[in-house]
Length: 227
Image (cartoon, rainbow, N blue to C red; front, side):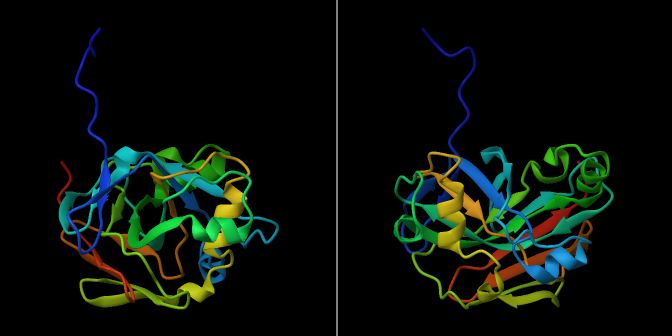
């Protein structure tokens, strides 16, 4: 028995300071995890519980690349986020167990077709076209530690656009992982993009996007003309 075509190569993240790779299985994303961002998007934080959407592993792209402006949008946005990678199994876990299951942290860009996302909101349809974009999850190398109050920021062509701290998150990493583990058998290979602070906005071909979280490797993306 043989595959009818070669299977897709596993997507992975670099691990800072080593030649090792972290294989990625699933990408979970937390919605509206910073109050100011929820307000700028015309919504509010759900303080009852965090909520989620997903990107496929095929969306993953390493930092430092030049990638084309995607098709199907005229309003492509950056969102700078902290990414958490799991290193142990989690299911119906409390926050202490969830915190100990973290393998590492990284900076990431949750790129968004904002017009397609708005279509979904307006018509009460899924956000897939807005969020699950080829090369739409640009993630830097993983580090093992990050300060819970580290600065998170992003600039476009050298101009600062986002500036906050991780302490501004509504739901902490342990709280997010504990809650999410009530719905999925989480484990190594699962990563979570934990939401973006205020200041999101559009970018165009030729723009250079540089994001950072103090103590972590920077994440960078240059946009080229559409294919």
